[in-house]
Image (cartoon, rainbow, N blue to C red; front, top):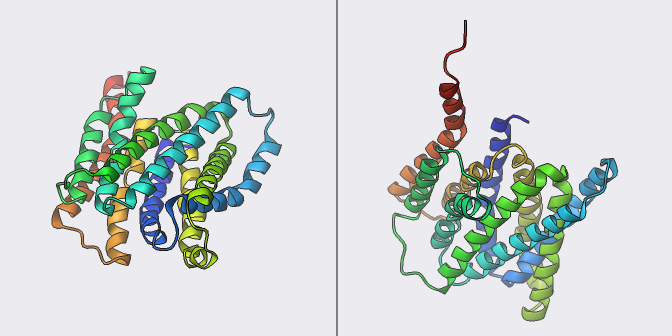
Length: 299
């Protein structure tokens, strides 16, 4: 798959996640955060199960123990990130949550460099700075004093960065993107339901009331978007993937304005433009850099 197509898949995942912020916000009017996490990932796992089974039947070899452990670590990182974000949303504002979740764009290259010794392409650093600045502008250019929910969301961003890096390390060598997605969803569903049933009220009427959000989050924001992430990351780098996926903040602002009546300040529109300029830099910059390094063709 060409890198351009892979990055477009990641951009689509970001758009779907942006819509998911609306569902996450409204769902907790009826059910607790861990029940919502468990149910959305249960729906996603059920939707993806037949596709993962088909992939397994067509595979030449079974998943190795090393990759299986990696898949489970990815699921644990995903659940941790989602739990921190969802609980944080009960304390902090949606604006702060969207801004702070976007910090994973900055965390990915730093964690890759410090933990793995992988140096990103030089153009990624200005693209990261532009993305971070754009997300800040979408939040209005400033944050109120950090509270406990904000700190949880910063932890969420760190765990998302770990998840993105782990996916990049395992999806290509394993050649099992659907199996990876199914296992991370199933583990997150099991952990979410276990904690939710132990700590939160299970009221059928309230779950039915939240069913539209659960189905949207499970089928699209989880099942489809995370699978697009896994597929797209087979053909691009983790830092580039983080930049494209971070457009969820832009789309969250747009969908919040459309469906929740939230208003985007003028500086927010400028932030959206900056984010898309960062995307173009991440997409076109390495190609132009290689062409310039190669020099003119011999005649």
